Length: 297
Image 1: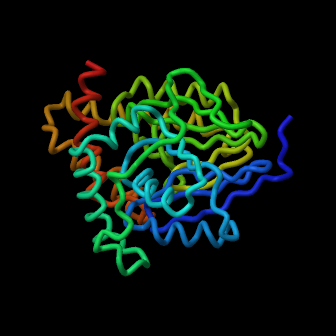
Image 2 (image 1 turned 90 degrees about the horizontal axis):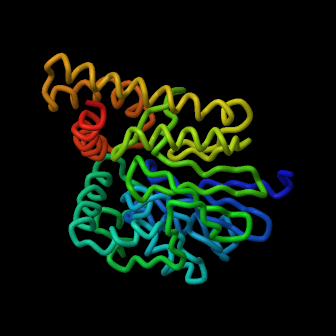
Image 3 (image 1 turned 180 degrees about the vertical axis):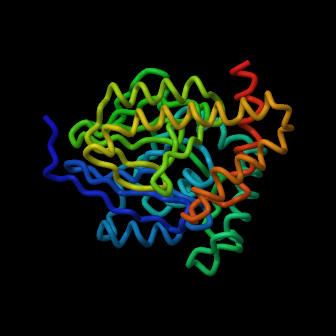
């Protein structure tokens, strides 16, 4: 039986493109992702306002990308009683100097492309990336109960550490970029590390049949939009795979395929939303092409 009595979601995003959401479930409040590090001070202000200063009980991270987990350490420093939930692989990533360097580079690019309201953003205010610490580690790949009625579900494919969360009492799935993001009415594939795992994640979503889905960078899907989303996600991934492979087989270079993806997906669908900096999109596109071709051939 799904209890929707206390169904309450508030967007507390600090800067467009680093969306994060507060979910109230029974007597607990969960912050789903944290956004950019440079926008963490604004996110903290939004969270304090939304919770009357109490802050969240949990901070649930889907993966260790700069636009999803960059603000985690800063928000933990502000809301000290909040337990940070992360995949064990996410914690490993935050321990790598090279990974932190890339996060900082992409943060700097995002500040230039989508300035947030915090005037200190360009000076790195909110950057506590090297102080990241998870309080609850999700071991994976099995489902893992991290709090009452809150289950972490491994969803690798966007990254190896990607994790979704299911609020059992609400029938709400906090989805991940492994199954894509909604933009301009379409589902945009955003898997990077594995095409096959993206299809597996869509099948798992279908099994769960969540009446409501909190979609990354978009917001709430409910009713038929939620129930039909897994099938739409699978189809979008299949179309993208064919898009890349057919161009590769026609003799296009990787750079030419990147430009084709840029036009068909970024310019047409993502750019109008203003939610993904171009530098991050290009980085992801360059990473996925050789992996996808190797996986399909």
